[in-house]
Every structure is written in structure tokens, then in C-alpha cells.
Image (cartoon, rainbow, N blue to C red; front, side, top):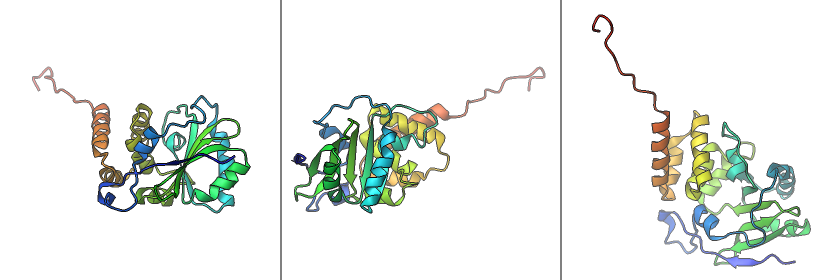
Length: 225
């Protein structure tokens, strides 16, 4: 059956808001469009679908990267549950027919010019997925910087600064604790572009307070030293 088609308005970073096509932040996409096809329920192991998605993407010669919770798990020291898979690709149009033929249930979210930018739905056995098309400079950078098809830790942090749910903040803190060679300038640049710099400064302030070395109070010894 034909996937449903919705028209969405996406909002650009501040320097692009006067352009003809208006993009929304990833955060606005996540919050505005709840999946109407199937509520997110516990799925024991979403990662078992990774080889199947990889085969589809590679069969279409797409550029692709894993984002979201599954990507965060690559960099956290502690594991956590995740119920879905999220991807960014260079072209979602080519996926529509293939996913339909393989029994996926999904809807297509489109720009005002009718170009698709998000496929959102479930696999034949009920695992939720979101596949975004890389329309913005940041998303294209994330595709270029992937590490074995996982978004880089810096790009995962930027995505999560935009989503900014409790689990996103937790992921950011755990990535900061685990990764010692992060490109902080890169993160700050895109946080500024997406106007989530306050989120970045907030999480950094909390992280630095938690991980600051203890203050040693100098006491007097027996000799008064």
C-alpha cells in the first residue's frame, strides 16, 4: 500500500532562515512527528536489523550513517536500552520502493516542494526506525565523518543537543566521560549554528562540576607547617 505523505516545514539554522526552503532542526522533527503507525515499544535488540539495513543501503549505493541511541552506544562506557534505529542517508527517495517491497510500514514526510526528507515507520516485525535525508550542511558533514557507518561522537553529541530529552543528556555526559579526544570546537560550532549553545554550555558546566578534581585543604602538621 502507498505510504502516507505529510508535508512538514523545516527550520534552518539562523544564517539560512531567509532561503526559499525552510528546514527545521532535528529536535523539532523528533518532537513534532510522533510515529502514528506503531507506538514505540520495547524491542529486544534493534541492532539485529543493522545488517539488513546495511544490505539495503549498500544495494542502492547510498551514503549512510547510524545516528541516535545505537550510535551513542558505540561511545558510552555503560550500556543502555534503545528501542529503535535512526539513520541519515544522502537520498531517501530511492529507499521508498525497496522498503515497500520488503514489507516495511512507513510514512513519508515531505518538504513544501514535495521532496521527501524523512521515512518513519516500522520493520515487518515491529521495530521502529527513522531514516533522514541529509539536507543541511551539518547532516552532510555527519555523513562524511562517520566511523564505520556510525556517526562520530561529536556528531552524536550535536544531534542530542538538538533532541535534548533526558536520555539525550545522559548520552552526552557518558560520551564526554568516555571520549578523551573530542573536537570541542566542532561541537560548539554546530551548537551555535543550531542555536542550542545554551544546552551545550549547560551540559558542560554540569560535567565539569561533577568531574572536577577535589580541592585539597592544606592543614597544619605537627610543626605548624
